[in-house]
Image 1 (cartoon, one colour):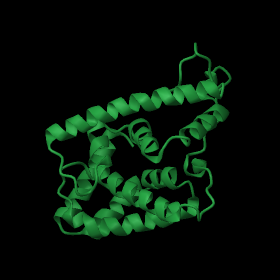
Image 2 (cartoon, rainbow, N blue to C red):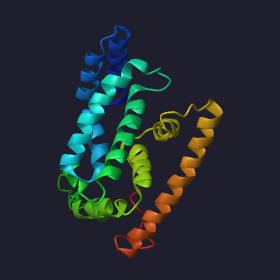
Image 3 (cartoon, rainbow, N blue to C red):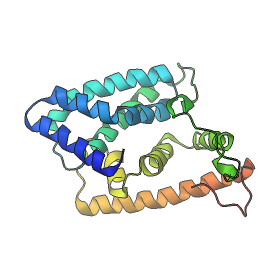
Image 4 (spheres, one colour):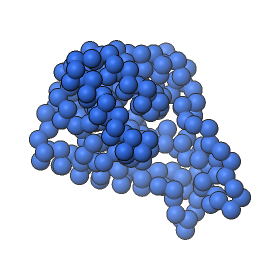
Length: 209
């Protein structure tokens, strides 16, 4: 979704909330952002059915909590935070009980690349990089997903990763964003090392991140 469309969607959601029509606000939000919220839950849970259950719980939580949302950040950023906490809670409660499946089921099908495309952009290599990302901790995977896949600003990443009861001042938020940037660099370094160990690219070949 391009920035102008995202801004228009945000405005529609906010106008519904101002009218007190929470159900319509959530309906519009899920129509616009639903697929990316489901992909987030899929990246945390690695199980199609469990992610769908989590999506249902997430939708119910939006209906309950949206009237109290103070609009100190965008709806999208706040909703990502809600979805992330639900995903982690369900992952913890289902640990050891569920048979995981690849979260590739939650990704859009990648079209075949042309022959002149750089090797690391080919479908099979992309799949192997996704497998490498699954070796990271859930927290590390979420940082990558929010920053690389969802293209959030570091301030929005910091808001999303905050706990629900945290009240971050602008100074605290900037400090948290700076820490996340440092963590992001370390995560990229680790991914590069894992990729080299897997012989996805040589030390002279730039990584795709």
